[in-house]
Amino acid sequence: MIISHKYKFIFIKTNKTAGTSIEIGLSKFCGPDDIITPISPEDEEIRRRLGYPGPQNYKNPIWKMSFKDAVDSVFKGKKRPKFYNHISAQEVIDLIGREKWDDYYTFCFERNPWDRVISQYYWVNKSEPRPEMQEFLKSTAIERLKLKGYGNYTVNGEVVVDKVCKFENLSEELDQFRTLVGLPEKIELPKAKSKYRKDKRDYHDVFSEEDRRSISELFRDEIDLMGYQW
Image 1 (tube, rainbow, N blue to C red):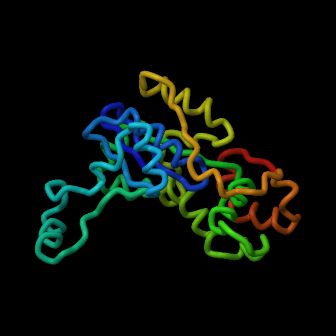
Image 2 (cartoon, rainbow, N blue to C red):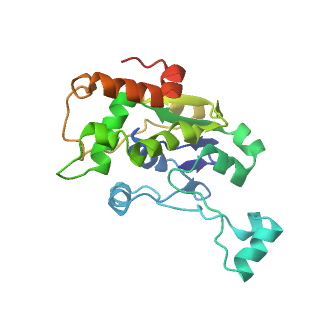
């Protein structure tokens, strides 16, 4: 995730929505006081080669902590609260306060759930032999997909970001965002984590009718929110 004090925006990263590529692209515009959370070593190398700022300011400093948490951190070895890759909106609010959250432009991306499930399938199962799709749909990986999507940008079922952008309109959404917050140039996205999905078939050709119904039920919130259709 990224918090830009310079341009006053917060990017909440959902999974399997080009989030890492967006993070890297946005890093270019970050100043020394902005918050950038770490990504994988492989993706950090992409960011380094581009000459963009890497992870910074993501550990909550002691002077921003409550007295009790500061004491526990210093004398009891308690880990400091910190920002991390797929942190939820609620956790960010807890760290920066509701006033700043409301003052900044907050956004994330959502994706057609049937297509997103396929992307998750190949991300979790990077090599053969891969499980049958019906088996995968019953795994905890699908629960995590829900948690790190809808669960990241809602609190008690209510959307708390200013905009949930559509992955399917990625370029247009980023252009609108750039204009809104005043970024000086176009956001260029590198290809990150795009090599794992080998099956390029349309999701209609992958899922059975039973699979379609299972995904529809699990991701009903996202489907209703974004107007996705099978």
